[in-house]
Amino acid sequence: MPDLPMKKVGIVSCSGEELPEGTVSRLAALKILEHLRQADTVTICLPLFLAGGEGDRAFARFYPTIAIDGCDKRCAARGTEMYSGKPAAGIIVTELVASQGLGKVEGKRHLNKAGQQAVEATAARITELVDELLHKHWNRTTGTVVDSPLPAAPEPTQASCSCGSGIPVQEVVINGKMVTLIALPLIFQQFHDSDKPVSQELPRALLESVKIYNQVPPGKEDAYAECLAREYAAFLTQQGATK
Amino acid sequence: MTSPTRKMMIVPCSGIGKTYGTVSREAAYTVTEDLRPTQTQLVALALLVLGDDGSRTDIAECPAITIDGCKLACAAKMVQQRGGTVARGFAVLDVYRRYKDFKPSGIAELNDGGQKLARVLAEEVTAVVDGLISGKQGGENA
Image (cartoon, rainbow over all chains, first blue to last red; front, side, top):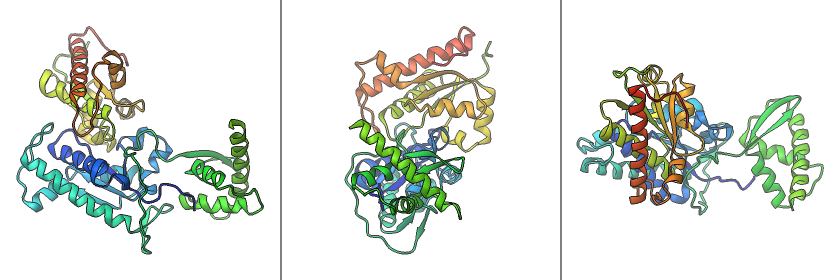
């Protein structure tokens, strides 16, 4: 399996500028991303699901995602599900505030005391959810949690924002049809870095890696493998040219 | 000519992971809450993404000024995708290039440079609002 960013949790916040609870959700998300679980989490701006590319729209399939919503309109959860994939978990700040009796949250730009308490409470809940999800096995083909446990081994990184970087994708032509394959550039790079020999088995090995992140239609495996071998050869040529 | 009774929609980018997103949001708050509270209205981009009826109606009926934090220009793209008109699109980075002394940092909380950059950006947006309302300026994207 390629050594891709496997064990991170995606955080999608509503960022609702119209209400104080939107500020709570945004600040709680940042607290996780910058301090509490910096190495284990990554985020994306909600509008990027529409304004971005295929890689951005793959976000919630690639990462088990927690949607943080300020109100019951649930823009983050609904938007993520509509344009990317079903979130693995969700929090609604207004409900959390009510359940903990924190008082009225006020101040979109500068939160009052109840708002600051709500940030702490929301961040604490997100932390619990992140830790739970890190110990579950996430299937990137289906975008769902599967039962078998997978030990988490967080990788250290400074990156917290996915804007503009998304999940790398590559367009290829298979049987005369353009197909977008998620994570293909990373898979090629990983094969190249591990010095995998060009052999008869290589197309199948590439195909198995590609199938982790992409749906391969039944009966099309040979065509995909043939295409992958061709594209990988082009990748190697390009690598040679840039050395 | 724009009717004086119509509000200008101010649409910041909603960026959560970068400083420039915070600058765009702070500038939008400054315009809609401090500088031109009666002539402008903040539109949350997330609501537009979801196709919220109220936000779509506002965007369809009133000109929008977008403030984007990065080159992906989510705010401008989203307003256009949802059938709105971008009367003027601002990019925080362009403004920063003109005010290099105001170097922003911080996401959850902006530093002093970021606050100043947001302020000058808000003043530029306000000038466009005033121009559009008086009918002296319109229809261009930065």
